[in-house]
Length: 287
Image 1 (cartoon, rainbow, N blue to C red):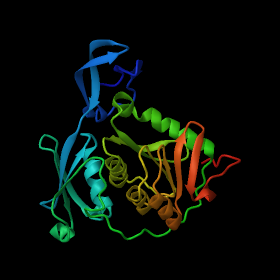
Image 2: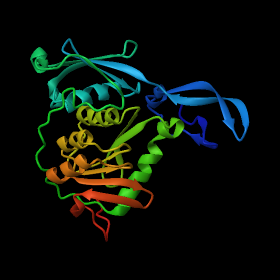
Image 3: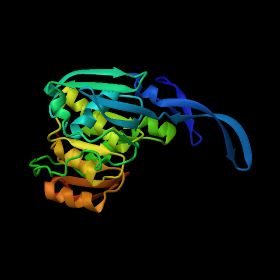
């Protein structure tokens, strides 16, 4: 698949417009199918999303094998290690070696093997599975102090652009997406077969490219569990938006850490589950 190439989904002709880097094109595979509709069968071609095992090695020690989409793998490796507390800052990273053929990302840190002295044994994690059983610290982040405001119209505009950018999902129906935004624009975006992976890819990009996460807005297509909320809260992001639903624990944690949690942001509707003081009802916040 290449930028500008058309495909069919649900009887609608669509075209890729954001595949300039070539990374997203790695996520797709064309397959032969038998389509049955309205009592008739026909041979067709369809596009499915690829599933790829990535083994992350930190200072010669295997940490985990993630089932993921084969794009933005450096971002995923760094984002995962950052989420698990094994990397705190960009300066901690000495070198990253990515072998896409073998599916191995080797990350070398300045702390050496001491950085992984308490790592649990290697686990294989399904793309959609949570990771609390692996490493994630149960330590709650500090309360988020931010004067950031957002209007419903700004939420709707960002959600619309977010869904427009989710081209792999529109082509296959098989991915989640995540994005870091300001009030008007998407600053970092990723898709993956796993919602945790998509979030980690975005935060990995932020760490490697020096994108600030404070006073920003984060959007995800997936369910907001406590794990997803903690990932976002640890980066001091004050506003979290989902196209989907939150869990009860995510709602409670959002209130505890002073994070604005918005769910079901679709069309012209949304639900504010926590931190409603940051949502301005009568005028756009601008900026």
